[in-house]
Each structure stands twice: as structure tokens, then as C-alpha cells.
Amino acid sequence: EAQVTQNPRYLITVTGKKLTVTCSQNMNHEYMSWYRQDPGLGLRQIYYSMNVEVTDKGDVPEGYKVSRKEKRNFPLILESPSPNQTSLYFCASSFAPSGEYEQYFGPGTRLTVT
Amino acid sequence: AQSVTQLDSHVSVSEGTPVLLRCNYSSSYSPSLFWYVQHPNKGLQLLLKYTSAATLVKGINGFEAEFKKSETSFHLTKPSAHMSDAAEYFCVVSVKTGANNLFFGTGTRLTVIP
Image (cartoon, rainbow over all chains, first blue to last red; front, side, top):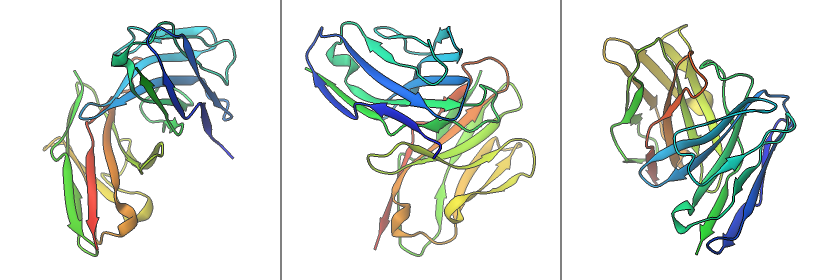
């Protein structure tokens, strides 16, 4: 089954404790991205990756890091989480960034930083 | 510049009555347009997309949308609402240039009253 998986689905942590949210896709997609969803703001892109070892900032990259060492995986790293990073996070992938292609979304990770 | 405006943050309809979710877009290029649906505690799922072919687009679960260039609109409709349609709906505009090219509306929450 074609899918994007994320782990963990729920995470409660404390300020400053490094964490990683994993994302994996089994569709051989080149393009992957991370979004955060906040009430009234829709989805905002954090980082994206055009291919292995190619990443770039989205609209709200501050406080986040990513890596793309393998095509299927695109982890999101919070080196020192802060309460304003409490949000719902989605990983997505597609064949290409071109506007015609559907984005496939993971189920989401709800992060709470206290 | 690209942007999306979903004109209603919340729409409430009775079961069996028509659904209309409104979306206006702004784009400097010929856009692709998408509607995604998000059910509670789920990721986003593609409902339908417009990519410069037929202006009336049919999607899953009886939804359809019409691209109206003169009005810069892409409203989502369904003739008869079902309880299972209760969810949040996102209008998305995408352009074919650049990698960071998806722009999300802020979402419309659809409530279906039995």
C-alpha cells in the first residue's frame, strides 16, 4: 500500500530536549516536505527536499532542521524545542514539486512542548 | 504572488442539502488547484484537482469544483451532504515554477447536521 508514515503520532516533551520526528514514504518519490498546521493558519511549509542531499527552507524554518540521506526518509529535527513549536506536523511526498502532482500526506504528529 | 482565500472558516449544512465551500485564489502564473479533505485525527486526502484541462472537475465522494478564471474562484460543491462529509477542507493553489510552490488556504470546517 502506498503510504507516508510518521512516528511518533503523539509526543509531549519539555523545552530544550532534542527530538526527531521520522517520516518515510514507499512510493519512490523525489520530493518530500514538512508542514505545520496551526488553528486559523492552515498548513505552512517548514522545509522541503527535492532529492537526496538536497534540502531547502520553506516559509517557517526557524528552530527546525532536516536531513535527506536516503530517498525514502526525511526526518524533522528540533534541536531545542520551545512551546511555540507546539503544533500538528505533517510530512508529505510527491513525484515532483511541479504543481500538477498530488501530495501524499502522512497521518500527522501532534507535538506538545511544555 | 500566490495566495488562497477560503471565504468561510465554518460551514454548517443539514444532511441531504447541498454543500458549497468557497475558494478564491491569486496567482501570477497559470495555477493548478486542489481541494484536500482532513477528517479528524487523519492526514490530508486529495479530493480533486484542476490542472488546466476541463474546468469542471469531479472528485471522490460526489464532490466537484469549477475553475472560473474570470472570477479567480475554485468553489467546491456537493449536491447532497452526508454525515461522513463532516471534516476540514483545504483549498490549495500550486504553480509550476520553483520548488516551494504549494499555498494552502486556512481551511473550512464543514459540519453536517442530522
